[in-house]
Image (cartoon, rainbow, N blue to C red; front, side):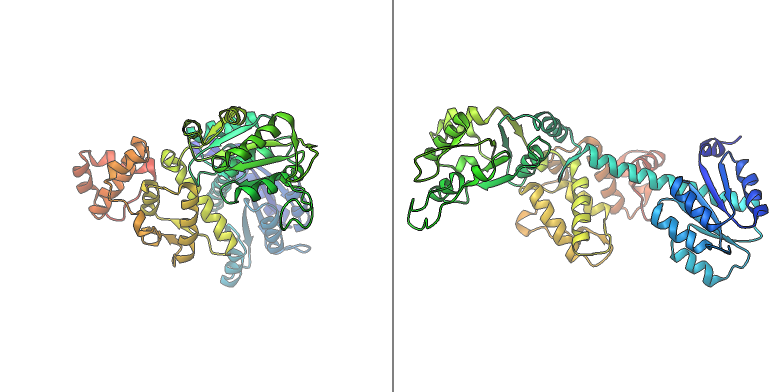
Length: 462
């Protein structure tokens, strides 16, 4: 028995043909290849079995009295889109074949056919099915292992963040999220909230840097009617609105010392008092704070309360800048590309190898937010199906004159990543001529082929 047959063991095939003699002939042929084959004599029975069983390949005759093969094809495409459907008929025409392929048939075969032909087509159909399933599993793995909500990454630094989120989310501990602008501090706060027992209650973020201090106090604690000019009605405030849930105090380092003292009182007494009010009200709110500043330095400057810092910093979560996790860039870029393509109803696009290399070596001073904005613009501006280097709308001020090695060092790239980019650049320089490229690289041609195969690189010449 050959290797292909051993690999095929366990794959199941459904044959639908009202000519049972033909159906069982196909079963005999394919069973010798170690496939599990089931035969039904009508399109209606095929539809029932398709719902009940997940087949690797479906072979259906086109001409059947109750439900024809085209209807079986339509049904399979709706319910089992990853399954390869092969249509067979004794009345083959070009128009019928074109229609079948347009509707998503994997192959179209006319009778009489040779045994070798049908087994080869079925084998390719199974490979097609396996590839689709692997892609589905890979996407599922990415979603389950590498993300909380819209937080995406597989780098060691991000895995540590996921681990902290999963361990801290179920608790009521206060959390301090530290990270540069654009690293996703609010996304982490949302992940902590929605993966906690408070997830059904409100999550209210407030940017402490965007609101004047007098107004910020009112927004947080509320006010009574007449507390100040313009207070024509009482206002509950965010702490009361978020009761049972979570408040994110974003950019808390920008909050004044007076208001910091009142936040400390909330943390200690679980009570808020509205501006102008005489009585406090009990609240149950988890506080998550976020900042891009070094709070220890702010304490030394007398701009942040040390006692509040220790209250907030029960669990610190440090978010790495994008340049320190360059291996996450392809995952992020593909995610944003898919996201915005769906939003603008754009045909699916992909990145050229050169464009992805440019993204990998760019200095992302605006972090993930900058990458997201650039991908959105690139999708809108690119005219072809593949986004190339010229389609990446880097702002002139952000271009770097750093060498490839300097960029690699600045972005903490692995040696493997640097090697892939360098090989690709040499191949481009030589017009894809492997013999010349291998000489420049100081390796033999066979080694270059092996490295290309490992990285999925392909040259256009030679």
